[in-house]
Image (cartoon, rainbow, N blue to C red; front, top):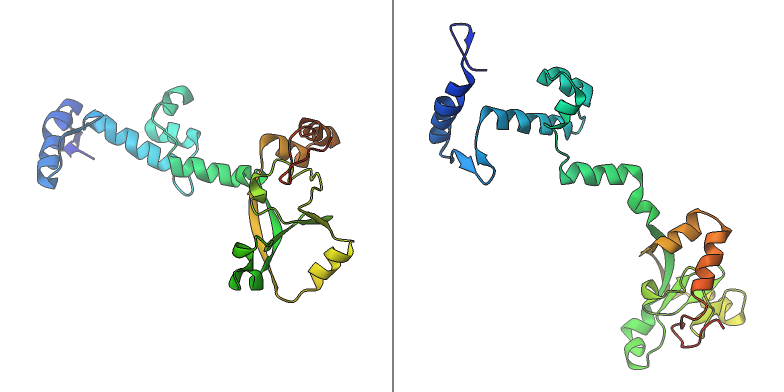
Length: 213
């Protein structure tokens, strides 16, 4: 970039004269919290930007571009940005594995009439597949992946459950529930993981009070 009569300008001249002059013209300081702004800093920044681009360069491509002899020396010039790291997690499906989406029925009449607040009547029904849970703080219930079927549980096959599904004033919604490590293992791994989760919850009180024992 910097040449005079087809000869490259010395690095020392670039750092001590050209870059300070360009900083003065741009109205920016010649140093920041990381130290003086130098040609090497610019090289580091461009390499990191190329590595974190939407269509990033590989380490082998950066090695050629930087003129480094080894990949180890090349990695010194690249730094993963938070956005690139978040994109990598998203592409790997990490967050999708840690969240499950379930259906919720909302009783609009109970909310608009004030009955839910005044009489503490249930207004949310979380679909567990085999039944409905009316615990308002369902996402905090430790038994949500292994329902203990407490007083807040309504089986779908029961008369109460069939009456609930037949009501026209219920609005269907979806909600995302973050899973703990134990719950994710029970979903993704095996029956053994689910059995371990059930054993751990044996003496844990349900929202209604009693335990599974």
